[in-house]
Length: 197
Image (cartoon, rainbow, N blue to C red; front, side):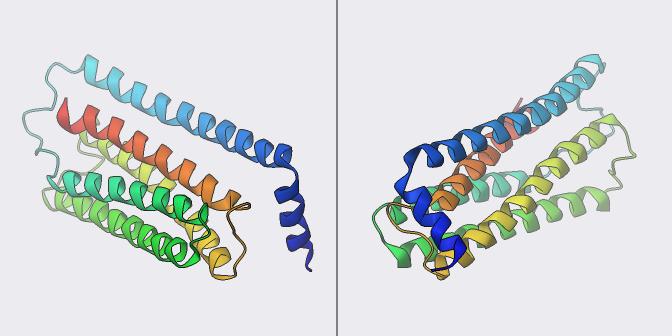
């Protein structure tokens, strides 16, 4: 038995250690929430001070944001389904759903890149004005955290292939689901503020 297996066995036997990990994840998400809240507050201040929003000479935000929204919502469903699967010791479903989640995350990033490319083709860049700057800042900040989440997804998918998880021990899957749902909620708030309101 390797040291990582010993560590996993110890965590499986000691629920208090698992609760510490969950609390640590909540604290991490709270710190990210402050970052996103500050960014959104800055956006709202800029928007409130503008005479007209959006400025009349700016293009509409891309309709592709609807596709991005659908993709991230669907990926949140698949990661939750993966978590439910490992809680029932359904290893094949866990691996398949994690791979689908990774694919959806990748397509989300491609969709976001396409949205940016469309705006850039209209000469609407971050240097165009505060309207575009805030759009690129918020969507770029979110995309960076999606990339970070993909690293986590790749890690837990590799561990799932190695048989590291079971119904009694699956903290990586749980933490990844928590992080991904957080990104989902952040995106929905951003989407509502930028595109719907």
